[in-house]
Amino acid sequence: MSLSARLLAASALALTLVAVPATAQDAATIERAGAIRDAAMERNIAMDYVTQLTTRFGARPAGSKAEQDASAWAADYMRAQGFQNVRIEEFPLVGWERGEESVAIVGARPQRLVAAALGHSPGTDGVIEAEVVRFETLEDLNAAPAGSLAGKIAYVDAGQMVRMQSGAGYGPLTRIRGAGPGAAAAKGAAAFIMRSVGSDEHRMPHTGTTRYVDGRVPVPGFALSAPDADQLSRLIEMGETVTLRLSSTAHTYETVSQNVVGDIVGRSRPEEVIVLGSHMDSWDLGTGAIDDGAGGAITLAAAKAIAESGRRPARTVRVVLYGSEEVAQPTDTGNGGGAYLRGIGDAVEDHVIAGESDFGADRVYALGLPPGAQDSDFARAAARVLYPIGVLASPQPELHGGADIGPLAGAGVPVFGLNQDGTRYFDLHHTADDTLDKIDPEQLDQNVAAWAALVWLIADSDVDFRAMRPAEAAAH
Image (tube, rainbow, N blue to C red; front, top):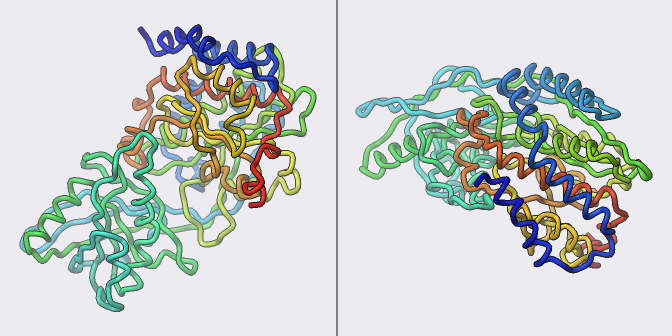
């Protein structure tokens, strides 16, 4: 039995288990949400969109011509699907190009290693050849005496990322990627290398942005594939003095990025806006299918499913394909999310809620609602509609959203999360393996169905998530 058939077969059981009436949502709204859900499971535009995006444009580095061209194409795609008020909103950006790179052990045990420069890392200005000093944690590197790494290469190998459905293993390691080059430079190092932030054991490095310090990334940084990190650590543990030769022609340049915005305009309260976010840019090693072409596909298809339901919702459903989510910047103005917030000004007060799809294309398993909404009539209505496709209520409130809608959350807009199964996400994330064939169409359809049903419930209601906040949450 297919995933669609198995999940839809749960409908009768769901109505038995979740029979509490939801006074904030009338029966007709709940029934229509179920119909939108079922229709989206059977037919939607998500696979068409992500197939065209990744095939026509491939990788879409932030600020690149590929990202700009893809954004122009996406705007036309949205217009063809019936979105209104479609626009492209540009903002300035420091772009980054990888160029050519190589990492190799030289000396008595010569061998090439598979590595990738970290995003926004400077080039090596020729070749850096130096001894490697290994640390097990970022804290160990920070504790090294000042000047102790002069002319050397700092190497942090914190071990393999913990594989978890929620993706919680990512945070403890990605901070090494962000802060590592700055920490290495502070100790006098000529360069920084690290084990890739990923849950796989493939000989395929994971790139990702590092952090600016006082307007620049201080030293070149590289990520080793997991097997090569193991190899390097074993040599050092055997007592070998290891010398690496690093080369990179990476460089930055001034450019622009852009957000692509389109609306399904509300029927009776069009000024009240629900934002569905994802990002257009990707890293350059793959084609950005799971990170984050899939997110754009899911949110566009969900809004389209609502528009096709035969009745426009009361509130406006807005899809934003944010630019330049992946990269750090030398200023604190934010990337696409910050540009969107600045652009709407006081209208942020009319933003009812925002959600972000940026965790691949595998199935949604839990719904996180804003603080105070977990035991509400709305939550009971959502549970009734989402249970048939395998989505349960999360006991934890959604507080921050993702990188793109984070600025909205910081400005007081409530956020929701449709939490996806991230068990294999960090096998592919930021690697050359982030390609279209990794998307399971049935799981993609389940995402669209969950988004469409939930957003319909919000958009055709007068539910006020801000008013539900506990007093202590509202104070912040």
